[in-house]
Length: 496
Image (cartoon, rainbow, N blue to C red):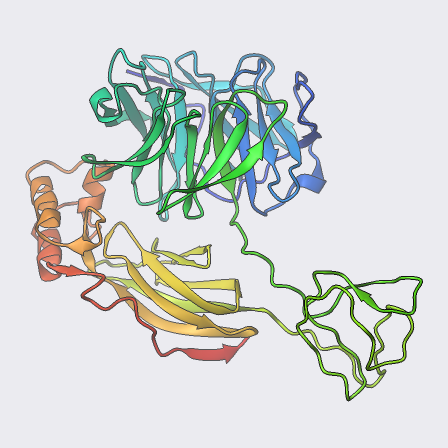
């Protein structure tokens, strides 16, 4: 089994990964062990992190998708990095080399990375690792051992300081080959990929038995999976990082490198923002001719002259027929200052988890923005673009709830209370006999602190018993469709 060094603490508070970084260029080999902080890159926005298993010493990098800039977060004094995971408060990086049985950690104290520690030694080589955030608790740490085509692989979960077998990846289920690449989403759905093989594939594994091919790439490899923001990010184990939208498997390129040739693991932090709303104020460029020229991005022109009407013309050159101004400077009456029009609003509400003493941990998603409910079920999401959006509310063992909401710029929409129905144990969008069988089977074994058991403990009292079975039976043969849960609801708007 595995040897645990108790000096390292695994259960650390999950927060946005904002780590000290050192700016670098893509084409330069990074051999120096960087240990300083660059405040200019310490941001809480959306970022992509990656590592290149071909480098020695190995490094972890931060990519800004908006600019393409790459910065070094950490470089080992010696040895490779094949897979990693990190959380902030305090800043820690867990990683594995991919060619030894050790799990390593380094901690950042006042901008300086401390010497690495070996916190776990497994009985076999650790190929990849993954952290999964939990509702209201510390993140769970998983790691894999794999043998390619010669034997079945295994995924382990750390239960405190004890490794527990989480899942056995059978070669026959994944095309005969598995190199240890995997990821989990926040509901426990497992994804595995076949690595750098011909016709690389991604499979989803639901409830430990429902195996579905999600995506196939006939040309490149697939590894370093990371599930976030409604998508699955992955590396082609060469020079590229992709984003795979789920469901639908629509793929887009995130990053194509010229200097990193064996990108092996990927992670993201923050929330991808929607496309910015165009400004209501025309942006103009001065010219030497007495003609006002607008940039192609302008969507409206404004003037204080009463006869002038704003238009939505996309023509890049505007003829100043309503004013005699001969420059590109916008004319504005001193008595009519511009009014800033808000483009975004907020949504607040409360979620009730049926048959539980608290309603903590429900996940609420609107326009790609996510909130997790407090103990009393309350949540609020701000900075939502105006318009109609789908509200999705979900929690393990509960039937997912979806409905639409009209977000009004400058206002807060009060949703009131929404209840989640208990009993969708296998998360297939339906409460039926399959869920009842899963709960009944757990009643036959002693209580264990494992993922599969906690999912069946609907009442969250630490014991799967008749109360959990009653919860399923009460809502049996219900699903999101026949409950009419995708409907427009009457809502109350209040000023922000």
